[in-house]
Length: 348
Image (cartoon, rainbow, N blue to C red; front, top):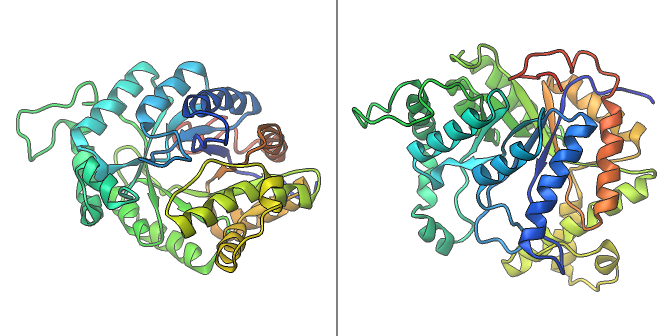
């Protein structure tokens, strides 16, 4: 093997549905996959929040995180993430207070600022596009609930959250890096394509970081799609079902369940579909174990990332499991990754 990954590897699972399978099966698959990820030595297992999306079953991340934590024993469990503009901060504090109380020392609070996909979903959630503008304020208020009570609501306490410390991770694009820095939170940024913008955002985050009670030093998690297989062609094929789902959503406004790669390959796409499909295939890390190890090691070197958060969505669950097994082997010899602190790059 040409390189080794010297930082912890973690998993984000979006509970993708597959053609011919119901959402309940997708959720059960997520819980089963969490047990597999723990056995393989992954550091964290996170679940996501999507509303009204036919191709995604994970709409209630705190609930799903509880199921995952209950089915595992060592791996850290969290959200990637709870979309704060969709929720009252007190409710989020209470949810994570319950999780941390039930599974002490294993819970991560990953937070994002996206709102619903359509106007109808945003109305149903009681929010709007402009809600993202107050994300920094919501983040600060959420922290107050854990510290002893939000200043805007005297004599009100979020129990059992008050007094607990749950590590905060901010899911951000390059602009959100400043919010993470100001909040003294860890930064999770899509960066496996290694663009100059990502590198600049990481540098800006580190320079602007303000130490907080839960995190004295900046911490950077690079997130993105990774596919590993015996050959580069097989790895690239793993990306096909998700790429088609993206193309479908861009041309029809609906994000569909995953379909087999061979079905996509047999399609006659319109020019517009082909354009979106090929765009969706770009910007991911994929290939053989040696290929992926070298590319990820170079990204860690370039960005100084403290951790990698990987996700792969494909119809073929057996090939998907094989990809994660191969990826886990790339970090198996990394002693430094397995001896760092529990809330930052903790023991895996």
